[in-house]
Structure formats: structure tokens, C-alpha cells
Image 1 (tube, rainbow, N blue to C red):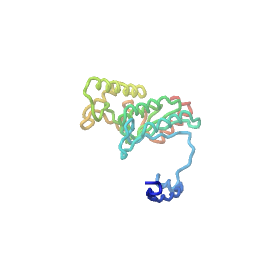
Image 2 (image 1 turned 90 degrees about the horizontal axis):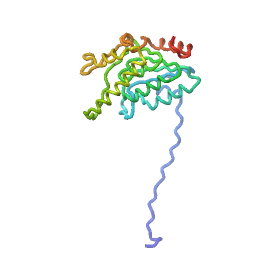
Image 3 (image 1 turned 120 degrees about the horizontal axis):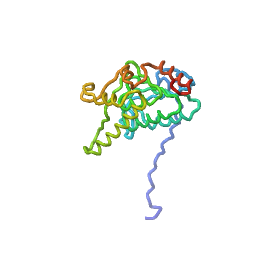
Image 4 (image 1 turned 120 degrees about the vertical axis):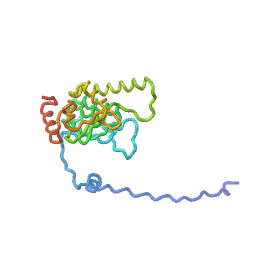
Length: 243
């Protein structure tokens, strides 16, 4: 077959180019995302960091889970430390816990900031959320908020060998040591609550509600947003040092 006898390739219609999407009206976007027509515009020197849902670590959780990704928090903490306009960090917690190493890494980074830091537990600050709550210079808990103290647990396939137990034991010691060093609770009292039986159904641990967390020395004070901001302004005025 010569070139003149070769069949012609079928014609394909090119898809028309889609017109560029018009930018969304800011007011419409505010209604869609926040349910209000106007977001107050105020330049504050306090950065508010929210840790909600489950702390997501090395494993991506299902999309229906409310999560806080630790790789999203690290850049914010770096920006807080480097930005001269930011004078303090307020951390709002309502978390069920999550990845132990990711949560402990966040707590370590928060505790190493040179600027004043204050945390407030609203709703719940459970499991590894306890370490994050106590990592700040001063901590608050709402009267109705709860905190769960329990040992580290594993999910999925667990190999029942001595090495697994040793790894869990060392990780538990890291968490306990951090909490004790950043709060007024003793090592003995923390372990006592951690391994208490009867408080949690089919589990071991202790649930602390509001004032209970203060009485045991885990949290500094019962209070809400007003008290947290007042303490932040106090720390800012004293150069970040507790009086």
C-alpha cells in the first residue's frame, strides 16, 4: 500500500476551552464557610492555634474524621517564633488524642517557643492531648471540659514479643516524663490515675472533669477565654516569665 492509499485518521473534535472561573465574592465565601456576612477584621499580636478532633500522624485518617494534621501545625509554630509582630500563642484544644509521636512532637515544639504560650481545654483534651495542654507556660480548662488519662494503646497488628513491650514501655516513659516536667503532678499520682480501674468502661484510666484536673496538679487553673487572654497579657507584660 502506498501513501496515497492509506486511510485517513478519523477527525476528533477538540473540546471547547472552559471559561475561567470567576473569583468568589468574599462575602459569599464568608457565608458559605463561616455562616456570617462579615468576619471582624482585627490585627492581634496573639496567634490562636486550634487543635481539634484527632491528631493525625504518619497515617492518613478517613475523610469523615475531624483531624488536625501535625505537618500543618509545625509551620505555624515556626512563624510564631520568627514573626516579631506576634507576641504570644494561645492554643485552644478540643481533641480526643491521636498519634502519640506526632502529639508529643507538637508538645515539645510548643514548649521550646521563646514567646509566651497559654493553652485552654474546651470540650476535651484526652490522651496525647494532655501533653499538648501542659506544654504551654500556663494552662486553663473549662469547668465542663474533660481530660482522659490512660496508658498508650496500639491498634492493628501487634506482635506479642518482648521487643513490643519494651517499645511501649519506653514510649510511655517519654510521655509521662514530659507531662510531669511541664505540670505540677507527681510521677506517682500520674501513674496511679493512668492505671486505675473502674473509671472507664472496659478500660483502665481516669477521667478528670474541670476542677479535678487542677486539683491533681495537671492543669494550672479553671477558666475560659477571658481568663486565658488575661493571663496571656500578663505574660506578655512580664516578658513571658511567670510571676
